[in-house]
Length: 252
Image 1: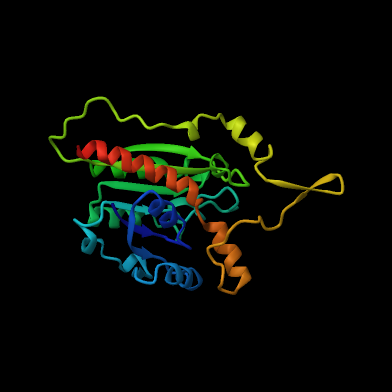
Image 2 (image 1 turned 30 degrees about the vertical axis):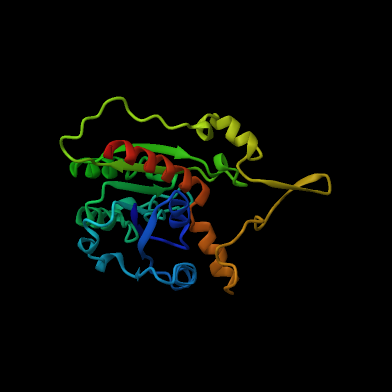
């Protein structure tokens, strides 16, 4: 399954989806540092720098999934001025335009929890208007053994050809999704932050010891910023595996 990765950052979506057996055919990312990371790890994959200028029709018919974490600043609870769709950084309309142009079978979108009371209804309504059936999940990164909770909203949308006979919906073995939120939190340290013991008291880990995709490229500040904006690849991989299994069912 070929993927168009929007708002790509340092490629977290593509790492996860390619781990599930998909192939990224193009990125869309404007940040120069993130572009360097993408070029380092995917030298043969083209990068579009401006989603406003991206014509998705060139990927119609060949690309079956469009993914992206559209900018979260307009909805983030950490932002004092939550302007939602009035914010210049609110780029869901551009992502939706590209989706309409590409006409993929699958859409996977991600955002912060603050999107729920500001933009989620619009997103689901617009996807529905294009014939997509949508499912929405709140999933924490620690469900895949990350060192932090980092709960995010994921929207998975699918459309299938007319005439497809649907019987019993496909079942996916979901042992990774059987824990309750309290169990997630307990496994992640209770408060959502993995703490390090020191001097008898828990201490904040300023930078988690994780394998960085930015390895080998200097610029520490940009690297930390890029990591902060990234999605968790192991979580995306599980979503990708479920999509692949469901897609096989719908196409059979």
